[in-house]
Image (cartoon, rainbow, N blue to C red; front, side, top):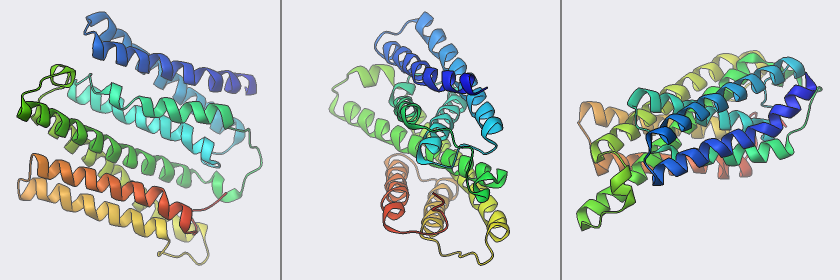
Length: 274
């Protein structure tokens, strides 16, 4: 089993590299064959990545959340499966070039640095914690997609306004579709963050004798959640649209980035397990 885990760990960056290359080529050269191959490659990559995560969890008896590099491979999978679902739902295939470089980077870093850990803290073996981390990562992946689609919206909007049409204009869907993709991604991110927060609140008293609900990352996540609840409510109840909703999405991503990076580095709390 160990040899199979190591082999898949070495192969995953190659799978992600081939998939990203196919998406990149299909962005510049619109050919039906490339379009079919890139989706097949994406499915194969996801299949082997899921299998890798599964046998790794079974072999080491904990979900891959005990180190930064284990979380990176989980993050790569969360980004890719989230993008795959969005592509299947919308059938918009040309935006993968702007997203799939992220799992390629995360998985490559993870594959070069990940270690086999048999001894970890008992708290890190909790399946609730594993599901909590995966849903939180999927939530932030959705938020990131929403910002990327928002930036593509602004780029396309500028080309149309200045009438300087280029490759982005030729390959991207309409402004309405990019706005829809940004909104769907934000909604997926919001739902996954909601699940992560609910699981966290249920699991917290079971894991700690004196839990604190003022952990900086928990507070920051709730602020992000409230911001997206505000934006989604504005879209549904006040019919916000166009650049207003796109700017909200990008602002939410900046807040999330601040939450995931600066606060994590500066403050400590129960979210620091290793």
